[in-house]
Image (cartoon, rainbow, N blue to C red):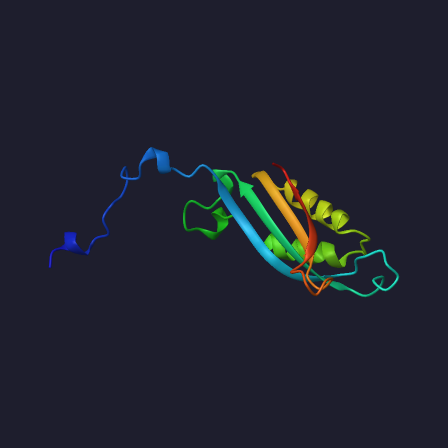
Length: 137
């Protein structure tokens, strides 16, 4: 067997320009985090399950185009900081929580668009959840 048969073929220049990536998205879906949230007497002081989803569009420079960890936008930040924020205080409204998460992520370098949603999955037995969403588009 020759060496040329064992080499990975090069695809440089073979991907059509029309298929070049135009956006780069990082996401966290249905992060299940307990939050002291709600304005009803029975909700105060009793953490509820909140499912948080975040979609972050970033610049090509902020999206790892090579296979090096130091090149990647740190998506551990999403889970760690959302959890920290959710546990840092009590919230009356999902709108307030979502706005706080949105502001935290929007301030990060490389973010070009953002969508943050939260939902309470345990409120109504006949619904998957009730929630809110904030987006930059």
